Length: 115
Image (cartoon, rainbow, N blue to C red; front, side, top):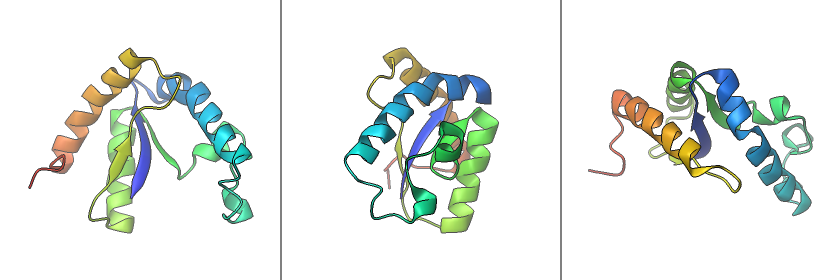
């Protein structure tokens, strides 16, 4: 299981922090035809708010924690790969998100790949 993830100070700041980078990334995916094999309902040719639904774990710490818990409960993946950085993302934002994410992962019992 692979998920895009960004933990902001607030949900609105998280969206503001990543909207441009994710919009650019998914526009490139669309240009490459990567959504051509998906059902029309999953097309990348959508406004950001529609595009992010069910595709990104994005928000404040509480929201991301809830989204991760829901994903684990619904899908039951053995492993989840979280992608926290995309082209165009300032490194300081990525590091701040990772610091917030590390607390969530520890709380949820993640091992970070350790056995």
